[in-house]
Length: 159
Image (cartoon, rainbow, N blue to C red):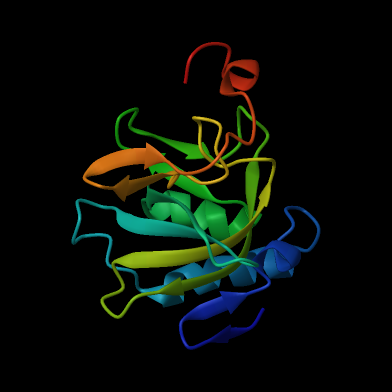
């Protein structure tokens, strides 16, 4: 599993659970060698999620050490919910999972950039392709795109 310049490529391809124990172990060793600074922000790092093909930012979440380890080992983005105080894999309810293609860290190692392939019509629980569907125009936040799916059909109620 190639590691270069703090980045890890082809993560989703190389870490299929149960397919190859050596790859899974190598993924765990990668986590230990990254030395991310989880202490700076109460045990969390900021995770910026970006579409690997278009470069569009899809969402921002938070990872603790366990969420980061699971992301590396499974190849699917896993986060720590600050409000629910538990781990959650993106798409566990909707099926709109995020297959990880590459992970990089910033200069302070307190944030990660996770490039993904979104497996579904949208990432945002409000029904949009990206959580960044509003733009500031003339001092007001305006919706800048159409919904990609109806969140009520997925989550059973208003988003």
